[in-house]
Length: 251
Length: 202
Image (cartoon, rainbow over all chains, first blue to last red; front, side):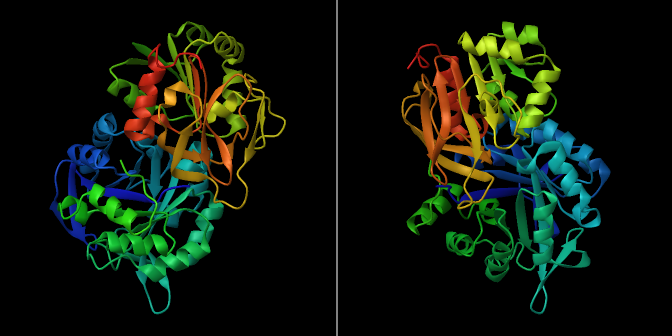
């Protein structure tokens, strides 16, 4: 059977790993290539790299960072952040990404999801969704949480599935960087709404949180802070998940 | 050691190139029939649909060169869609003829499991020497082969029933998974394919 995946996330800006809380207050968290190699050797199932560059100048370093990560990385690499077109995606894929994640640009131009699917296949097309809890529903927010869209997360997930997405990276903006645990009700509602694999993101502090998210319906769990800060290793977390009865790839 | 990677412009080959570089191989992207025939080691990667994959091989005039190379048993590694293109046909693209090196037709996963299959699944080795003891490998596929063709060694994975994860006949190896993304085990499979003794005819 398919295993549940544990996916460290590198937020990268100008060639360095950074980490913030609710997408703000970024601080330096090391070299992305060293981090990628370490996570892969510890048993990470995939890696996500999000380009959180604030300026075009910083963004210029992205392809170089991807190339350097690819050289050492023997697991799948998803890259997102600022992807607005098929040609943006192609640049990232040529540099060494295996999948490309789109977020704000897909909300502005949903056809982009279909264009990516046609150009590179569903297996390459990840739609990242940032969700904010409202009274009884979740709203899609874009541009690093600064723009409310009025879109209902659950409806948006069904739409991107029919548009050609292959996978969903679902981040709870409310939980991002807080270590309060993933948003379980959001994950349960999302996995009811789509057959696509869902990568849970935002709020992880422990293997218990991860097991909860997987039991709520996620196919994979993404985390940044706990791995960057050295509070847990990927290997420890996967061993703990295995002891909780979750099927993971131990290596 | 020089590994040539067939690049038809559709598939992303950066991960395949990087994996062979980590094994200290020289890599070259090729796309013409002469190079298909002459390459000491040839990789046929592939993502996309059965129809688009075959169309690019037909457009570039590579079909005969690939068929001859594979029937001669020269070192060839087909990955993901590459494995599927070796078959006769696929439910994905009715009416499209594959390379037909293998008497088999691909079918979709049953609707009891989510499709595409994305992620790591266990590959058990029945009798394909390159696979060693088996291990977890990374898949991204919607179609699969459910019977091992005569004369090939195989490895198997369970997803909505057993399917063919890998085929081997001497130096010709076809993987439904992505060995270039399958961690240390995947790298071991690539190294075994490059090594005469380890891929001894099964």
